[in-house]
Image (cartoon, rainbow, N blue to C red):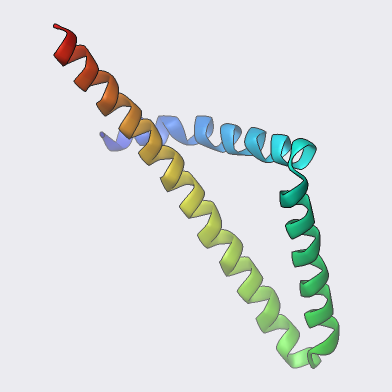
Length: 95
């Protein structure tokens, strides 16, 4: 896929992922429970760590969220590419 198409898809992917998170928050008990647990554990770690290590914890959390965002985008983009490939394969086989 051309880089220009990927750039155009960035906004679509970002909006779709935000929409999916919204649905998860409204409809998925497990997601909400794990998310609450994660936040609680992070807060507990932050409170228990010495002040000089707290910054490292925040940096770790920030890096973790960045990695997750990149992974989500790549998974969504690959799914889109796979769908296009499958569509093309089905179209060719039907001709």
